[in-house]
Image 1 (cartoon, rainbow, N blue to C red):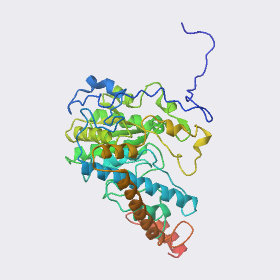
Image 2 (image 1 turned 60 degrees about the horizontal axis):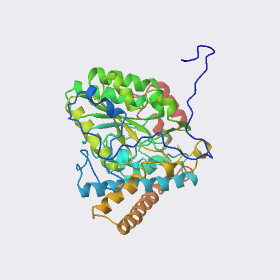
Image 3 (image 1 turned 180 degrees about the vertical axis):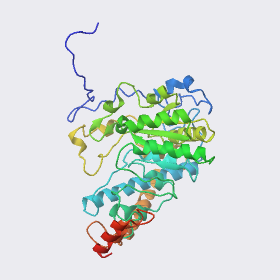
Image 4 (image 1 turned 90 degrees about the horizontal axis):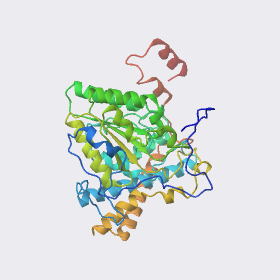
Length: 410
């Protein structure tokens, strides 16, 4: 029986601290292929257990098994591998550029490349993502120019956002990438609103909301679920659980729900967990959830179980709050290595071709970087015009801004 005496305040503790031995014994990894693939119009009440398991396709031997397998051709998988490799190479060059003082800030995707790259290939042109700052794979996998991304990071004269946004906060309507917000969780309720508007106007486009595990503690996350469930908004509610919210482990934001996917159950939303380091599983689950939305069956909440290998950002030192070798112990492995091994097993790839592809991709990324830097970097070269900060804010510029622009001489 619980002690009815003095009250004690409870603060969840991570399994291990810096200097300790990494421990993921609390992460239950189901056998690949063991998760059922429900019918698209399934009653959410009948699949409640899927919010506590993990959908996996690739097994330890690199084989694709189970009912979620077989949706992608070898060519599509090779393209997906190249997208992930490109994002990783892009990250490495931009992280290095930040250390060289060419930009003020950067955020890597190391270990999470499969989530955004695979999801993008399940969407249709016109669908809209409301991303956070670690979904650049949505752009890479859709053919958005790397030079343009780098121009935004450098805030140079060719920056499409005119230096108005923090580096890596991209925006592209054409590529279905809503402007990233530095205010966490705001994009979640915006995605639901956009999806509701699409339904009201009898359109065919759906929305995808993105949020990290830490930001699910924000009120906008819960408000989004209320509206999405009530109005059956055509939206996929993505939660990227990479185990860490900056320096805070996932147990703080998760609370007592057990999993982040379980949050959707109380709202009557079908909720799934997927191996976020399995390109095939991510794509298959995304396809399923997107079809539900497009068939007027309402929202789906998807939790991607992955791991943030790198620092939270270029301003972060993860060795201060977790063991240095923790990423090596992550039981779901590396998404690029896993897809590479699967393609080798299928006989359409090899270690030699992989090494060659790495060199080719790096060459392409370096060429894009040189072109972007010809337009300027943080401390050198061309800058956006001072006049730009007055433009595009109001349909008709108010008198006080007109006076300020005249005073600035632009």
